[in-house]
Image 1: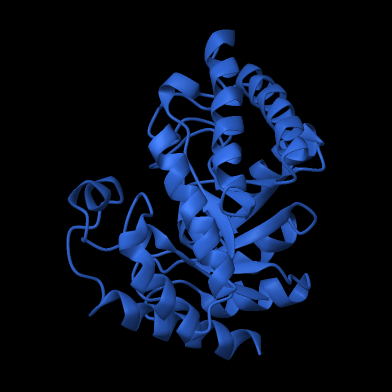
Image 2: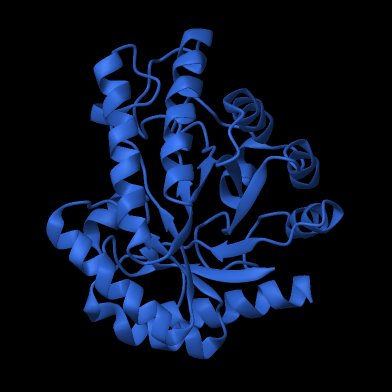
Length: 282
């Protein structure tokens, strides 16, 4: 497996100010970083280009993470909004090319924090499939993979279980559109992590290692035995990326609902989290 660290622990947009952190992550032994991709303007593109050179010099691989907003909702009843979703994902992937992004992950299937106050419909499913098929063509042209992520019911309503997400990816049926598995969301929505992993074994290509409180992996209530045994049972050998959140950025802390300190300091979390991964994968 390849180990990664999500940079959302420090920032929602990577600039040269994060260079010392990249140095430390490389020194700890991480194979990759996961880059937040919420900005796609010209200035942001220049930051991504600079980041690409920096990562190459360090020998760090990269994945990216993004979300969809209401103005670019892949399951919207409005075709213009679904078109905007395809255009947005294409632009995000264009930015990702600048720093060598291999996999774009996140809930690319629907808008985060937008609820219809009823269960997802087959029409929404159809719209989402068509939108991600078009996005898959863009991803293929840019030589990148999309790993769409199911979230828990409090953040999204369209895809909230591994089985639902696997069915969706099967329907999209595009070689550049797969799914990811996140221990945090699974801890809320799945009754058994190993069984959930088995239900999507042919579709997932990316994994987030995230504790139930978003703190240091291995210190909370996630059934880690079931999680790690599930990955081993399906012979998973892709990225395992730590996703944790702190209070360094007030807006990000509010968005991720982090109201108290969950760890002593970010680098201690990274060190302990990486040791936890190695303990369970070597």
